[in-house]
Every structure is written in C-alpha cells, then in structure tokens.
Length: 408
Image (cartoon, rainbow, N blue to C red; front, side):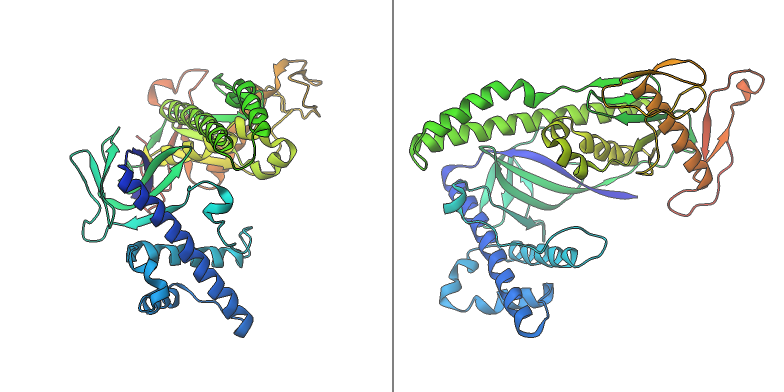
C-alpha cells in the first residue's frame, strides 16, 4: 500500500527567480479570482457551476485575447491545478458532511502588504527534477534548494510559497507503507490535555513546551513598536516582517516538537489509542492554549507514522467518557479542570486524573478493536502458566481484505 506525503524544503532563489516566483504566485491568485467570478456569474444566470473541464477550456480559450496575456506566461499545468482546487472548494461547500464555506476571492498584494501567494506545479514528463543542488520548476528555471533529506520516491507535484520571510517548496511523493504487523505486542492509550501535552497509560508524559508563552514578551514588544509606527511606512513594514518571522519561528518549534513526540510514540508502541478531540470547539474556549499545545497536530502525525510502520492507530468515540474514571474499579467521578488528582469514592485509590484517563482510553480502545474484529487477544506460549500475562494481539482482519492469519 502506498501513501502520499509532503516533504518541505527551503529554497534560495536568485533575485531574478524571486521576482518570477512572486509573479507566478500573483498569477495563480488572479486565475482563482477570475474563475470564481465566472462561477458566481454563471450561478446567478442559470443556477449552475463550472467544473474542472469547463474551467480548463475557459482558460485555454481566453489566452488568445490581448488582455489575458498574463496567463500565457504562466505554466499551463499550474493553471489547471488552480481550476482543480476551485472545483474541490465548490464541492466541499455544498457537501453535507463538510463544514467549509463558499470559496472567497483571494486578497491582493496591495491590501495584505505581503507576497505570500503560492502555486503548484505538476511533474509532467519529468519537468520537475532535482540536479546538482537545484530543483527545476517550469518557466522559472533551476532554483537552489536545501536538500536536508533524500527524496523518498519520484516527485508528483511541487507547491512553492513564501512563508515567514523564507521561500519554501512542498514536494509530494508516494511512500510505500510497511507490511501490517501480524503480532502486536504493546497497546497504549494517550490522553491529550492542556497541562501536559500527552500522557500515556504506560506512564509516558510529554510536558507542554508553551513556545508562544516563552516568546510572548518579545512578541508584545514588537507589537507595541508596530503601533507607534506610521502605517505603511518602511519602518512599519520592517517591524511587520520581524513579527511575521517570530510567528514563523514559533510555528517551526511546534512542528518540530510534534514530530519528535509522535515519532517516539510510534516507535515504542504497536497499537496507538487516542481520543477523537473536537479541536475546533476547544479553540473557541481557549484558542491560544490549544494552538500552543499542538493537540490536533500530534494525533495527525501519529496516525500517518503508524500507517507507514504497519502499526494500528485507533480513536475512541468523541462522546466516550474517559476523564474521572477510576483506573482500578471503573467508578465514575465528576471533576473540574482544577482537580488534577482525585480519590476514588468506591475503592479509595488516590490517582492522577490524566493517567487514569489514559488507562480508561486504552481499555475502551481495546474493546472497540476486538468488537470490530480487527485484533484478537492471544498469549505467548511462555506466559501461559504465569499469573500476570502480557497483552499480545494478532491481526485478525487486514485493510486489504486478506484472510485471517494464524497466531504466531
């Protein structure tokens, strides 16, 4: 089984190439706004939309007009990708299972004061390749790239964007997943909360690094400095860029932390059980805390890492109760956010709320997996006569539809 992943690399374009990249990003934004306006006009006329084939034909037809010469200088495959993205956005806006709004026009450079547009090029006929420390981009040329890791497979597409004062490219590649493990020796549940980012049922704890809080003093200083500047002046622009770079540094720190924690979790366990958190609703309650704690990011990274390693990732139901359940007898308790420890009213056990919650999550996840027929409990022969037996599972149903395998 193959999985499509993105790998980000830093670009170091020359001044001439940088001008070209800015121009192409603006062209992609212009094509989006043009096609969206045409769709809105079409809907007002006959209540229908233009989809990919119609939009691609429209782009090809208007190139012959003089006022649309700016589209000719743009890569035709990249222009088609803009049409595909708009089609996806229109379909998501009217799908019952999605919560996206109707697509909007993208803001121009003059209003945002930042050329942070992006465009995506497709690797047709090996037009995108990396040679001698540079990546070739259609109609841009060979742009120097910081290749900090080798490519996993052939390049499918490249998205170029200017973020936080640096040029980056996101390369899409297909990665082969490892064969699913037949015998799974370790299952662990993980509770994600605000005090500690992750607490495992096996005692694993990852404290919240609070990167935003550590940079808050410097951020406040720059924001006060920005307020004293005349809006739109050169000094205002420089302070704005410094704030943007500081936010980029915080973002990279969070991503690095999430990758390291998710990798450690995946390497040490065979079955990973998490909660299905409603991160969007939690952000309305305390958005900065949730964002600084990378709650949703850790679960996303752990999921794809587990799939690559042939391991199991499972999420219990969103409305399954896990907080305040005694780890020894299963008694339910009502706790406030300030109650970090509690004593069970039934058995009298004094315990940590987060650790007991993680143990409750792993019990619920184990029952879900067994009930769904995904795994079956087995015991190694050497432990058959022991009083305390280590939990071992066999994979009883594979995603590819294979027959049930015998226990190892």
